[in-house]
Length: 180
Length: 322
Ligand code: SF4
Ligand code: SF4
Ligand code: SF4
Ligand code: FES
Image 1 (cartoon, each protein chain N blue to C red):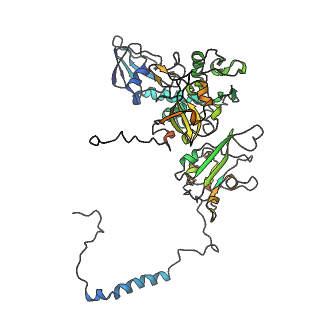
Image 2 (cartoon, rainbow over the protein chains, first blue to last red; image 1 turned 90 degrees about the vertical axis):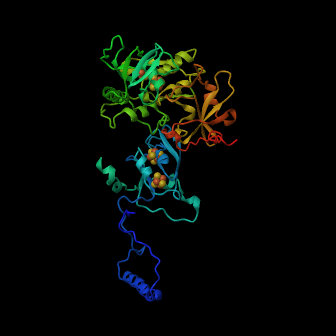
C-alpha cells in the first residue's frame, strides 16, 4: 500500500544486538540531549519579578464600559450570554426610571450582571457579540481565590469606575475594529 | 380548479386564491414574506409591499406579463399564471428596497426591544435586506406610551401594517384604537389616550409583526431565547384556552397565542385560536395551566438554543419490538 506521507517506518521485531542490549549508547544519547538544554535560553520567566508583555489582543478579566458621560453602555440585551459557549454570563434586566438617565444610556439596563470566571474560557465571543460596545476583555488577570462563589463577578467588579476608566483602546485598534 | 406556476413549480388551486396563499400551499422557499397580511384577519394585506412578486404571464388567455410587480397577498391567481418570486432578480432587488423603506424610520433598537428574536422585521431584514443603512435624515420619534395596563405602544418601531387596527375592529366590541393622520405622519394611537381594556385586545401584541406593541406584564423580564415555550391549555369560558406559556424555570413569564410558521395565529377548523386578556395577562402561574409539552421551535430560530424537546420514546421504537 502506498503511504500518505514519507514519514512512516516499517516496524520489525528483529533481535537486539549485544551493544543494543547494553542500553548504554541510548542512555548517553539521551543525556547529551538533556545537557544541551542546560545551555539553551530559558523558555520560562521568573514571575512575579519579571513580567511578560501582553499582546494587545490579550483576553483577560472583563470590563463593562461606560460612555463619555459616565452612563453604563450595557442594555442587558443578552447577546453576550447567548454567544457565550461556556454559559458563564447571566443577567437580569430592569427598566430605567425617570431621573436615572445619567446612570444608564438606554431605556433598559442590567440590574444584575454576573460572569462566572471559573466557567469563562476567555474566548472573547461576548465582546464580539455586544452591539453596544459595553463588554471588553482587558489585560487584567482574574485573581486567584480559594472560594468558589467569589469567582462569580457581579457588577461591582465588572463595571468600570467613573473616575478610574479602564483603557481598552489598544484592543479596539486591532483586528476588525481597526478596519472600520 | 386552476393551474398556476410559481417559481417553476406547478400547483392547482381553487379560484379566488391569492398568489401568496397558493405559494404557501407549495411551501418552502417560494413563499414570499408577508408583514401586513394576516390569514386570520380578513381585510389585511396590501400595506407593506414586502410580498411583491413578478407575474411573467397573466393567464393562458392573455399571457402578457404584468408590467409592475404585484402584491401577492391581494392578487388573485388566474388560470395559467406564471409567477416568479425567488427566481426573479427584480423581485429580490425590489424587496431589498422595501426593507430599506420599512427601516427608514425604524430606530433599530433591537437590543432594548422585547420582540427581538421573534421579530418579523428582523427576519425580513436578515433575509432580504442590505447590510448597511444609507439613511442620514432625522428619524421621526415618539415617546413610548402605555395604552392600558397591559400594552406598551412604541410608535418608533411601528411599520404601519394596520394588523392591530383590524384586531381592534374585528375582535373587540368597542374600538378605541386606530390610526391618526395620513401618509408619512400616520401614527397608531388610541382615542385620546383611552385605555385599551377589551377582552381580546391583547391579541394585537401577537399580530404586531414588530415590537411596536408589547406586553407590559412581561416587559424587559427576559429575552425570548432564554425562555422555554410550552404548549399549555386552561379552562376558559371566553377563549379557546389554547396557548403557549413562556417559562423561565418554574415561572411563567408571558403567555401568547399559538402561532404557525408564518407567525400567524393557529386555526382549528377555520377558527383562529385567539386568547382572551385574562388568560394572557393574569394567569402567570403554572398551576393555572395544563402543560402539554414543549412547543416545537424551528432549529434555525435563536429561541431553539437551550430549548429541548423531549423525544417521545415511542416515536422511534423499532417496529419489531413489542
Ligand atoms: S470570554 Fe467567552 S467564555 Fe468568557 S464570558 Fe465571554 S463569551 Fe463567555
Ligand atoms: S454586555 Fe453587551 S451584549 Fe452583553 S447584555 Fe450588555 S449590551 Fe448586551
Ligand atoms: S403597531 Fe404593530 S400591528 Fe399596529 S400598525 Fe404598527 S406594526 Fe402594525
Ligand atoms: S403582505 Fe402583501 S403587502 Fe404586506
